[in-house]
Length: 250
Image 1 (cartoon, rainbow, N blue to C red):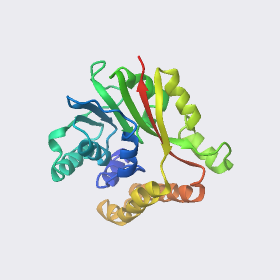
Image 2 (cartoon, rainbow, N blue to C red):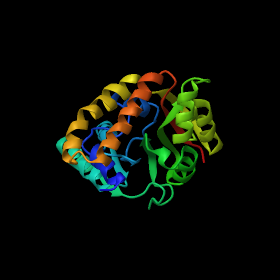
Image 3 (cartoon, one colour):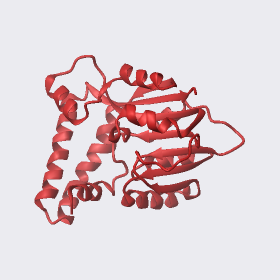
């Protein structure tokens, strides 16, 4: 298996492929004014196995297009949606987020939790805006500095991993500069990282290594994840995911 195939194998059985929670999905959704009289059209881009997709399906009278590059994730989403009785609201689409096949002004809401970094925040906002109806909403969670100053170790790490990391103010400016009016912002609490993402991840390490024959590549993936967890535990007061909700003006 390649590195990417191993990463998919490691994450496909997880409820979440990044920090988050049902409560925070619903909190972000509370900033969205939902029209009545017709089903809401939603795109969940970079949906993974779809924990937030299912939350949206339960909360909305909506038709949701769940988009991800990896078919294993989409298959898990379909299984979970059927198990929870919302399969009729969700259609899956295997596609790269930077080559989406949608027509302009298709959706009332574009959603993406912890995935827009694959394109970059500004590039994603600019690209996906075309698919939103005027007056529609975009809701994004994005890695964000919580303080103006940080220890050099965590600053250097994130500048290397994702140079576009910034403060909430910088992200809100990107939205405003691209024709959006921000309507809500908050950041994810530590439980979203530790209880909902990292602890379940740690519980999968041994089974993943067994499944992969304890290969050197599998061990390197587990070690990288362990280092990420240690870094978060050490510097969790300095960064998190910020959740940004904004309305398209024109």
